[in-house]
Amino acid sequence: MNWFNLSFLGWVILIAALAIAAYMLHVPTLWIAIIALALVGIGIIASVAKSKPRI
Image (cartoon, rainbow, N blue to C red; front, side, top):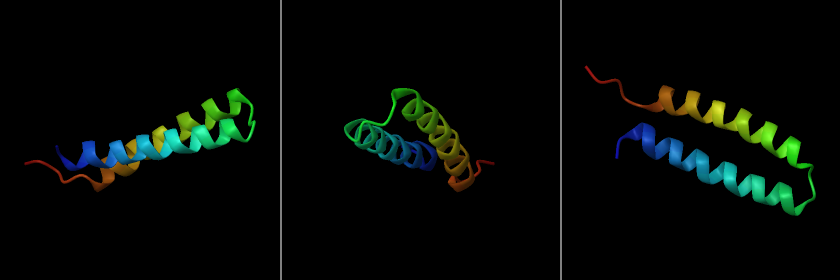
């Protein structure tokens, strides 16, 4: 498992936990989806920036 996959897996787990917490707090589903998509984008950017380049 490379660094990108490991980092992105951590982001997915974090996003899932935050989405469940927001659902339990009765946040509207549309807002949960919008925030989750934004966090997925941030997670991809952060994972790519953190991964080691291959030569």
